[in-house]
Image (cartoon, rainbow, N blue to C red; front, side, top):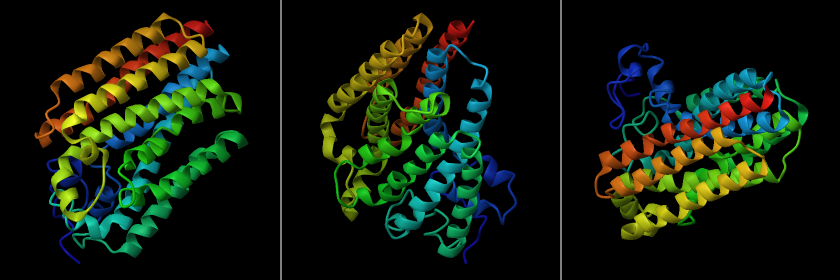
Length: 310
C-alpha cells in the first residue's frame, strides 16, 4: 500500500490535502470530494427540472426540501459513480499522466476497499431517494443502468460523452417525477437539451487527455472532432439552448426563465470563443465554468417558479 497522503496530480492544494485525516484522503479523492465540479454539473439538471416542474404546478412549498435532497443525492451519487468509474478504469488510469496518481492506480487503497466505500455511498443515496414518491424512486433506480455501462463506452465508441450525458442529465427527469409522479414531454425535452450540454462540456474536458487517449486507444468526442471541435460545440451547445427553450415554452415559463436561458446561452457562446484545444489548463477552466452557466439558468427558473406560485 502506497502513501495515503500522496496527492493526485490534477487536484492539489484542496481541503482534502490540507484538512482531511490521512486515512480518509484516498476515499475522498476516489469520490472526487476534493473537486466537486462534477457533482455540481450532475446537480444542475436536477435543480432545473425541480424549479420548472414547481412553476408548472404553481406550488413551491415542497421545492426547498427537494432542492436540498437533490443536493445531497447529487454529491453522494456522483461520488459513487466516480468510485465505479475508477474501479473499471484502474488499468487505463495507470497509463495516463493526469490520472495515474489516483488512489487505485497509485495503490493507496484496494479494489475491495473501493467497492465497500461505493456501496456505503449508494446506501446513503438510496436513503435520500426514498424520501420521494414511488415513481420517483423507481426513476432514480433506473438511472443506475446507464451509470453502470458508461465507463466501458470509451472502449467501444467514439461517443462516450453521449452516455455520460444520459447519466448526468437524468436529474432533468427527476424533478418531474418528484413533483408530478410522472415524466411528460416537457421533461423529456429538457433531458435531451441537458444531454447536448453535457456532450459539449465533456468534449472540452476530454481535450486534456486527447494525446494520452490516442496512445492507449481510448475513444472520445474530443479525438473524434479534433480541429473541428469549435464547430461541434456550436452544434451541441446550440442544440442544448434550443431544446431547453422548447421545454420552457412547453412548460409555459415566464420572462425570468427566459432571461436565465439567455444568460446560459451567452455563457456557452463565450466558452466556444475562448476555447483553445491545445491548452489543457484553459480546457479545464472552461469545463468548470459550466457550473455557473447552469446556475444562471437555475436562477431564472427559480424566480419564475416563485412568481407563478404567488
